[in-house]
Length: 321
Image (cartoon, rainbow, N blue to C red; front, side, top):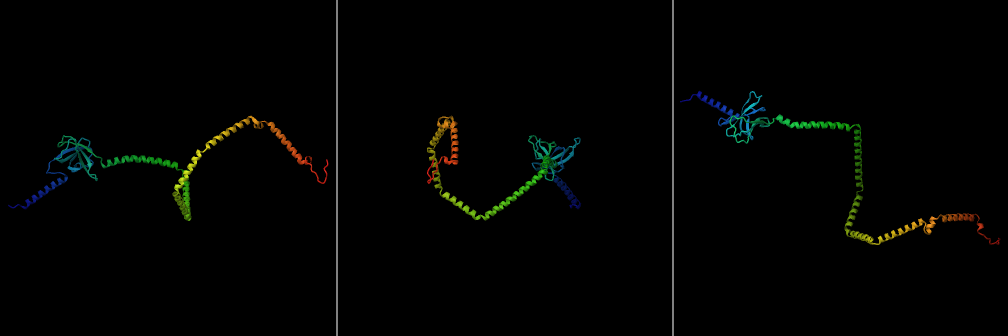
């Protein structure tokens, strides 16, 4: 029996529609060939989560997001269906957390498996949480920076006020003079450096000769180090000999002599002995003074009237009295 073309076309179209429906649902995450369970989680904000977004456990896809609806009389809270394969065991205290699955902001739900021995049943509502969205994360990161920036701006403002107060007109003039002094000092250093360089160039031969002589002197000292050691040793022996000589005895004798001289001077000051009487008794001084005065008068008279004291005879004339 021949099959009509219309039947063949109907069968092909039906199979194509079935494949299309199965493929479309497969792309959405629904698998008609495996059994699945559905849990629920309630959120205040799902931040762009849509149906068919992946359901992850430690980054591994185990299901998808089912129907999403707003719960009535709850202030806009949203109930999200979590569809996952039947072979995945979910503890009762697991947490369904809305996370970003990529850098573009696509959303997913990550199941944080708990440690409860009791397993969640189909239709149970799991604990829910939500990570910070990009805006909240940026705000949390920017907020401390904003506070620091405000404090920094306040510090800069205070610094500028102090800067204006410190760097007034007089200070600017002083700074200008200081920079000019520094410039002059640098110019002097450059001139000095140039002069030193010129001196080194012109006196290069002499400097080389001096260094050569110093080198020879150092070599001579190194070669005669033994002799220098002997000289130093001789000086040491001489100093030891001086230390061992009778210098201390001589110093002691000098000290005794000084003490005796002190005793004699004390007696003279007291008027004891001949020297003491001569020094302390002024009668001898007065007599000597009168004698000196008389002698001076005598010498004057002799100079004025020498004939009174000296007889000058003429050889041709006899002496007459």
